Image (cartoon, rainbow, N blue to C red; front, side, top):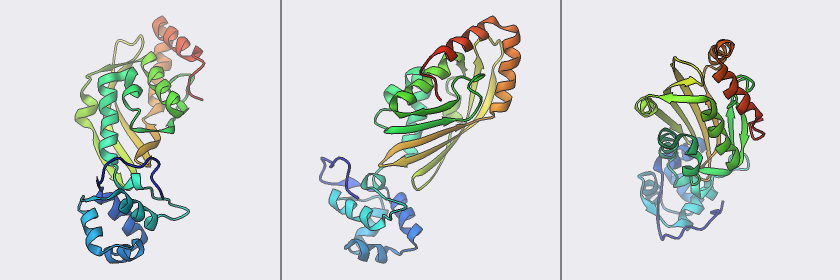
Length: 239
């Protein structure tokens, strides 16, 4: 698999953990991968030790590891998905509704963001496609939600990775527009990477409980009803 854009540098640091994951997925030893890629086992050991290699060498390793069902791109072998996932959450915590502006180098052009739930009650739920959709999700979320304890997501964030998949567990404290109380909610984010960027993101939380709280709030709060109506009137809401 070739680079989408040829790197400018003469050498790049490999993500040894991801390289080892793909090698073991095939059931190969370092020596077997070396033979298939046309290099010595010493080169594979260096790469799996987070060493630096020439871009063309990384490309050859990606070719050797790729199958028609599970392609491996050279960008996958140098990216650090856990760090990228953390950066997205840090951008969310700091920039809130403008989060997407600071994530452009971290997400794929055709990213898909899925938030299960009833969009007629929680207008940020739905499926969002592309960079514009990614931006619209955050705008929809902050059109009706207010965050409390801005650092909670950072303090509680736990990140787990396997190959090109990352799972984040965190807690957020927020309230729906018009509510005088706020709640702490556990959240699980599932991220899938391709070519070193986030290709798909799923945002999972207890939508049933959240919807019940919002329905109760809508009975008594005109501010909540107005916020919901304005959000639902936005033609760019997720599908």
